[in-house]
Image (cartoon, rainbow, N blue to C red; front, side):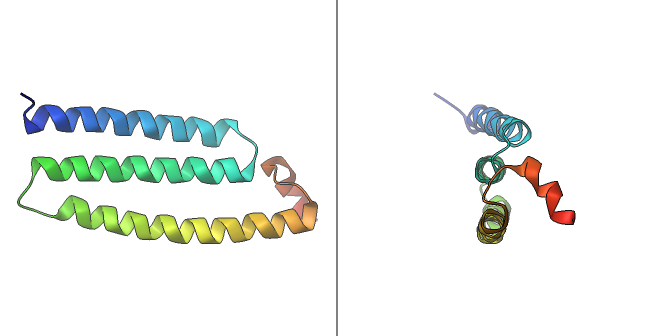
Length: 105
């Protein structure tokens, strides 16, 4: 039988693995869309960690409330990020982040 403490540790380990995959994906990939998906993966890992925290403190809803706000921030980030990526593609016909420094000229 799994007690809540052990399950929460497993959820936190999965959240850490997801966050690491997202961070590596953001740092390694040059495509802006893949970088946005990596940021979303990191935000979802944070949500998993917050909800697993809430399993330990079942009487409080703090983890769920913070997860709700993270979901709202993720939605705003996705809409603004996609708008910037579309505008960048229209200007440069490319979605590679290495070419973004040419926008300064």
